Image 1 (spheres, rainbow, N blue to C red):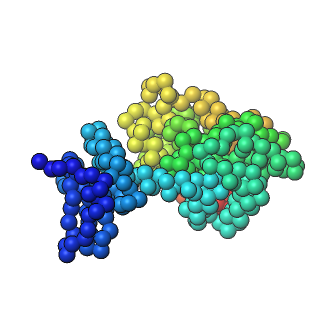
Image 2: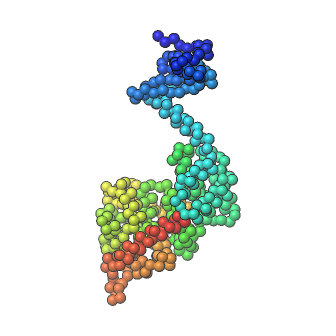
Image 3: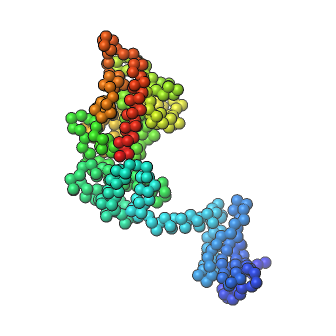
Length: 398
């Protein structure tokens, strides 16, 4: 039977020619090194493997302290928790807590996430952080920041007369909070509560769409950051990539996707003009469809209703998402993606108007007054659709 240690015995333990152990029972012992240093250790088994937990150094950790730590470790074992793993996790948590301010995490996020964006975008993001966010919430632990504190910081931007930067600042803040959540340093994103509290970003007033490249970039980044359902998120991206009528997008069926030819083939019965229609799919569009296919590919609709896969997504699904992101009906609507593409493909990218009109499924006739068939200018339209997707990526990253 092992005789338990006493404080006196621990204190008087002298080094020998070899390291030796003084046992206290149930795996707890004092390890005495040849140089006279003394270490508390606990030997135990977890998942049939022998392990040793370091409990501290004597005399910083007394016999009573060691017994308390030993008992805590045994309680963890009873609950199926490895004490060594738990110790490493606590150490990691302490290290993280030492640098859990908004500024520290924002700087980490910037290094991790902004490296692939354009230099212009990096500079603009850094300017917002350093000028508009760090002075007000930079030194606060990110898990303690409240929506009002973020709003107060962003209101300072609005007071300077800026209408675009406040929305951008909110988006950046949200991205940082989501990074903090992923890295286990925050539980919620309080910036989400600011939706609707800020002045809306102005758009082209005479048309419910956005054609200014800078504002379009903000919209695309907002879509990427949108935290809605997988279906709505994918529908948003496909809507802007393919710029077909909202009803056609909502009723897209998997049977209409020609994966081999990378195109969406719509039967005339579903089209406004009653003619078959082909939409070439860019690499970006294929990527979105491949991702959503993992979730809805077994059903009929690409974008099924949340109420049941036998019905398509609600006509308000994409519209509501745009409103949630802070955009009004006067700025952009689901139908506005068509006007956006029509304008930019013509005025900025310089594609042939008849290609654009044909891709919009508008009535386009040949020189003899006959309607073009569905394959007319298909290669040119395929090139145009890829050019459009590449342009959207470029604007988003500037």
